[in-house]
Image 1: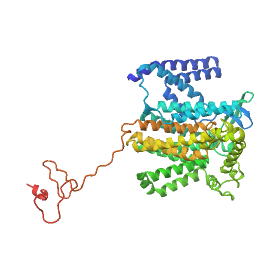
Image 2 (image 1 turned 90 degrees about the vertical axis):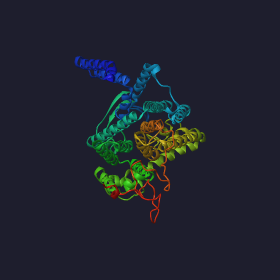
Image 3 (image 1 turned 180 degrees about the vertical axis):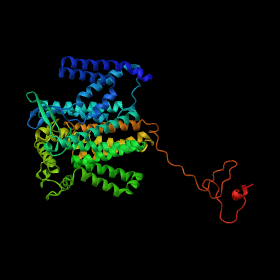
Image 4 (image 1 turned 180 degrees about the horizontal axis):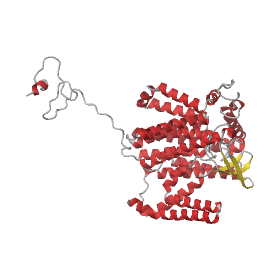
Length: 535
């Protein structure tokens, strides 16, 4: 009740603004004024409740349409998405909250800082310096704006998620976002909708569904590869949330996990399904209780995956076969030739674009050291992204950037393993384990052939890094996380435990005196049995 009274002064202006928006829409019948009033209400809501605004920004981060497109050249486009409008407002809300709290704020402690902050600062600084030799300055500035939005989102997530409750809320927002992804994929399977509103020369507001008729694969409100990867990440998160729930929520999260995995198959992303299989296999190998439980049900799991593939998208089997080198006629697809065999998508297209960028760097040896700069890979290859998060460090920043990426990956992996060993059993360890396995699937495996560092799709990789860094912070600050994990103490078999007063202990019982073989002797005589205790 006291908390509701404290929030009442914040709710009153929101209600007043909402009433003013409805009154303006009713009086003037102007959608632009109504939209402006609604935007003002949303801005005030985010400023008053910044953490709730951050969760909303996380839930809609995947949305890729509508988007503001700025065309610099054919195939060279800067894009801004709806979530990029929320993030500065959320930052402003946190700054206002910090100013209002004043002296009540606790001082920042060293363990509350993310181990990735130096790495993120180095990436931002190197990209800022690389703008000096970027092939197109305006396009490079657009890439830096995307990077700045991603870095700000990372800092907000790591700074705001400070305990287990907030980490669970963040995981729930990821699951809700995955549900929305699945719903939009259903819409994209039924409809093919697109539209463009021209604002100026080279500037347009784009609306489209990533449908199979238009893009060849179903993604909904984002591309199919990113939708598949995000659903794999959400699958492991839902599994972690299901472990400590009661019956109905546990069944619900389990069904959501199976649903997400089915829609991964619908997306047709081979990298996503390979990341899921690799991360699940690694967790099963390293975690003995899960390995024993899953191996006893391995046939059921294989059948469930087969049903998910056949029900979701049988042609996915053809995509997997082609991805591993099969070049014969397709079996489950309507068309008898795959785009991957014609070097339009898949591994052939990736090697082709990487080879083209390497040839540009080989012609100018200084670029091998310094990199192509922000947006340089897209400019020279006319491809929308690098299609490899870890190669993006090299192509954007050269050998120095590649070393920075490897160092950041090593720090992240080492910190994750240390936290898994030291975090005591509990909710924090459970959620951190789920996030770590999800990050292994996307950042460790899928990112080798997908994602990017500064392109429009880079927001997914930064989301995975931010959630992992926040979970790592919660695990490091959990009670007892600094102390080493206790080991079981095993008492020696010959050191008897004295029995409780008045309660005889039979011979041979664990914890009691052991009777020597042969006739009973003084000092080794067994205690009185049931017959001796009868009246």
